[in-house]
Structure formats: structure tokens, C-alpha cells
Length: 292
Image 1 (cartoon, rainbow, N blue to C red):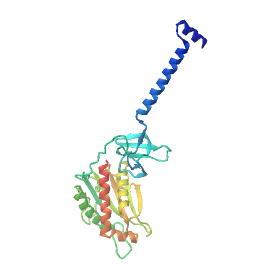
Image 2 (image 1 turned 120 degrees about the vertical axis):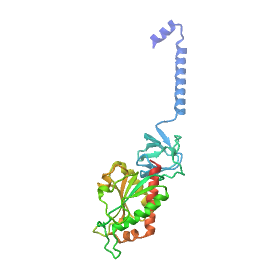
Image 3 (image 1 turned 90 degrees about the horizontal axis):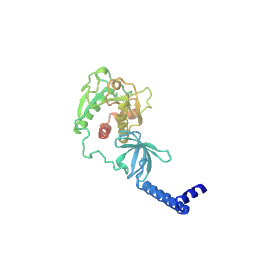
Image 4 (image 1 turned 30 degrees about the horizontal axis):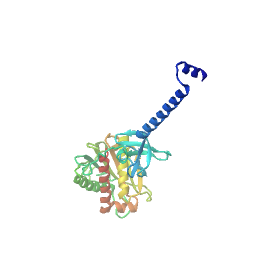
């Protein structure tokens, strides 16, 4: 310290004044740095400008994990298009959120007047047929799976065509089509089935997928069916079915109730119930295409 003061005096500088000038300069630097920090947006965090949902993936087709509220703040983990992967400060919530629900000034790219199914080619595959009757009931109704799947597919075809879709059927009547010929030749492939087990207790709807690119469609349709239908939720599951395995297109196999369960059988044979399920499938497909 004394050496510094001697050096300053040799240069004809007052040590006290030099020390005061240095302190003043440091103070100014601190003020400037603090101001920049306050004025610069934090690129690591995001704030919600409206109530929204965290989902399992960067697309509205993925299931909802949590409901989140306006004003909530999250740490940004990654981005995919207009979707942001975030985590709460306590790390209890993690998921994907649409950027237009945040303060990042990201515009929503969905046209509310759009017809997402217009000109989409959807292949409907009524399960079984001909000599292959599929599942059958043990009640007096004698319900056959091949009849219900065809009836459901023909009704669903009309509803999809009203939305502008182009619908192809793997069979239009009571004939059998080999599994290798039940292929996706369009944008979406949906195989329609009804389940059965030895036990009459099993009930509900299941949506199956095989390839990873089919999972989002399965999750979307399952969520839509559960939102409207009375069938118990058996979830979206991966399964090595040939009709799913042999196509790389988005494809699902729907098991829409258990013929072996008396309650499900009644629902399956009820036209109003089928209308609800078919409407749910249409809604699910619309959501899937809107956010792809």
C-alpha cells in the first residue's frame, strides 16, 4: 500500500483522491450492471399470460399433465417449434406448454375456422368379416363383432365425410379381408374392433398403437373418447398387431367396448351410444390434425 502511495506521489497524484475516484467508478459500474440486469429479459424463464395446461409432449395431441394458471413462472428447459418444455421452480411440475400462453409473444397458428379434416385420407378397417366373426356375446342378443365393427365404420365414414375427409374402407360388407391387405393408403389408418374375454367383468375402451409415430394419435383419440363416451378408460397401449406393425403411417386399433360384458354389449348395440363414440373419434382426429 505504501509503495503504491509513494508511486502516486512520484506521479504528482493525491492518493486519497485516486482512491475516491476508483470507489466512485466501481459504484457506477455496479449501478449500470444492475440496470442492465433489470432491463434485459430473462431468457431462462417464462411467465403465463393465461390459464393453460402442461402436456407430455410438444403438441396438443399429447395428454395433459397439469393445469397451470395465469401468472405462474417456469424455467425454460428446451423448445420445439412454438412449444416450450418447462419446469416449475420447485421441480414438481415439468412438461410442455404452447408458447402463445406465455409472455414470449408467440402467435397461435391455429385458424379457428379451419377444417382440419378437409381432404385428409382416412382408412377405416372394420375388423373381421365373412367367416371370421370375431368376438361374440353369450347373451340372447348374440352380438357378433364383425357386424358391429362394420356398422360403426359405415356410420363413422358418413361423419368424417361431412368434415371434408376422404374415407376408404378395407371392407364394405360382410366379407373377409386378409390382414396383409388391411393397409394404410392415406393419412390415417383406424382399425375398428370390440373386445372379449372369458370373464364378463372386463369392460371399457382401449386404443392400441405400435410404432412411436402412432402414439400421439392413440393418446389423442383415447382422450377424446374418454371425454365423451361412457366406456371405462383402459388407456392407450403399445401392442404388436399386424395391421399396426405393417404400416409406418399414423395408425391405431380401437377396441370400443367388450362384447363379453353385458353393459358394454348394450352400449355397443345402442345407436345413440355409437354416435357419441363416433363423434369423439371425429373430434380427436380434428385435434390431431390441427396441432400437427
